[in-house]
Length: 44
Image (cartoon, rainbow, N blue to C red; front, side, top):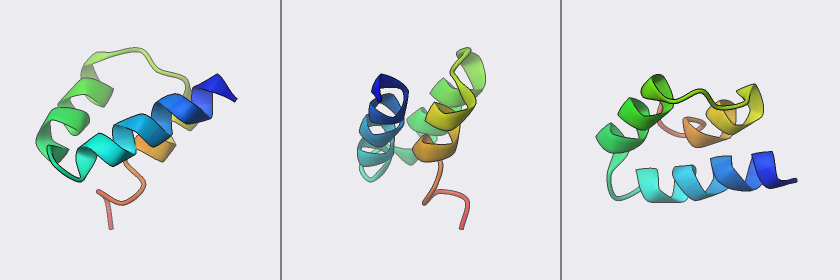
């Protein structure tokens, strides 16, 4: 549950600062689900 919440929080922040979120996801070791949720709307 916490893993998905991390992704949700990053996805919400990506609405205002998408470049930061992409950079953050690339530079940090996150669980796959967190990464997937974080960039869900950025890669469309």
